[in-house]
Length: 98
Image (cartoon, rainbow, N blue to C red):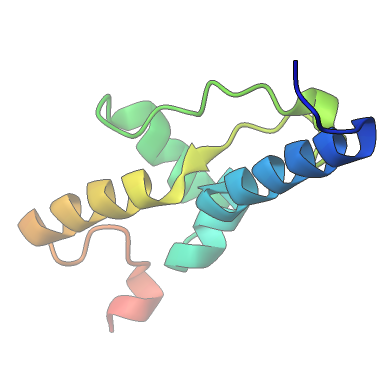
């Protein structure tokens, strides 16, 4: 049996949740991170079967951001880096290419 109090357990749970949110992003967060629209991220998600899958962790009960789908930021970074290696203008808006 654990010697942690209920408060200590709750603090530990919230710290784990905070760490999760530091490494996982919503589609809106990803769009801001890469300077593209939410629509572009959504198109990547539907058009490329190798786009990183969402996290399986259920966060809806935590009270943060509702039940939004989150993806590990580093997985998306790696995926995008590979795409841009083969096509340097991938994921860059036409306005920003000029």
